[in-house]
Length: 176
Image (cartoon, rainbow, N blue to C red; front, side, top):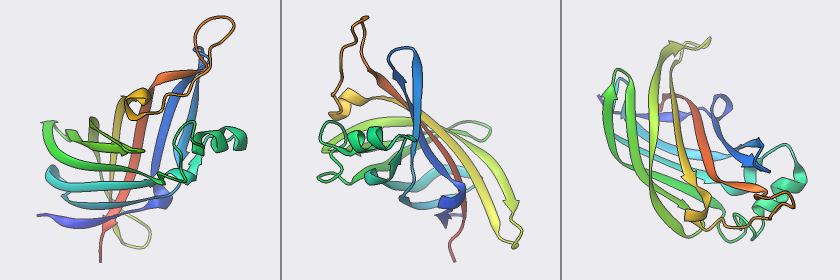
């Protein structure tokens, strides 16, 4: 049975990681987002899933880097304050495992992406409310979305990698 779910932002994370200087990874997250989820938690096929991520909420634990990421060099958060994802095809690929295909829009570029998702289970929180958990991951090339800024290193290579891993840890509860 399909029902509406509220994503619990306090217990959910929309994170990312990208190579830095070709030798390490910078990790970060988006602290503010909203979501529309209408699904059967035991079978996501046919679910209606949409996320709107607030770009200004980016956090990499470095104020200077975060401000640079918000600038026109990267996300141009003033002109494009949201990243959007809308699922358009969900395929079950095993017990509790799904491919969630959809369109992601960053800046003014929309591209198809596929998240590798897993239903993590159901429980009851201390206040007697039902909760469900999901994880999802994908990898995108940031240049495909117009995020092309980079800097060459004297030792060869570049400052920022092209591939960005997106990781979602979602906890949701039924909408009242």
